[in-house]
Image (cartoon, rainbow, N blue to C red):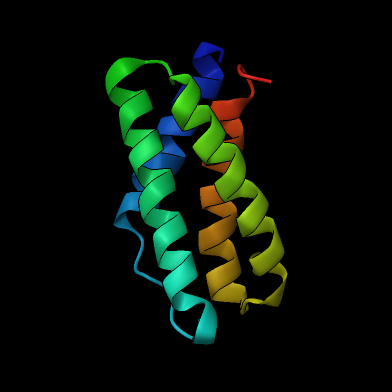
Length: 97
């Protein structure tokens, strides 16, 4: 990740952390809450360690695949929240492909 990418990443992460949990998630809310928690844990690990281990790379890949299947069915507010989460996951994985 370049310095510019890292700055943008931290800006988006800060925004995500301060964002309110979106409403109107219906039956997907539990799944989305789990994805947000797990992916947030990977982001936190990366921010602390400045790297990801193999286990977290695999977890992020699985979470992103699951997120892709749910996001198209969400409301606009929820879509923005989870697109931001997707950006964070994708940004972390760009060095691990």
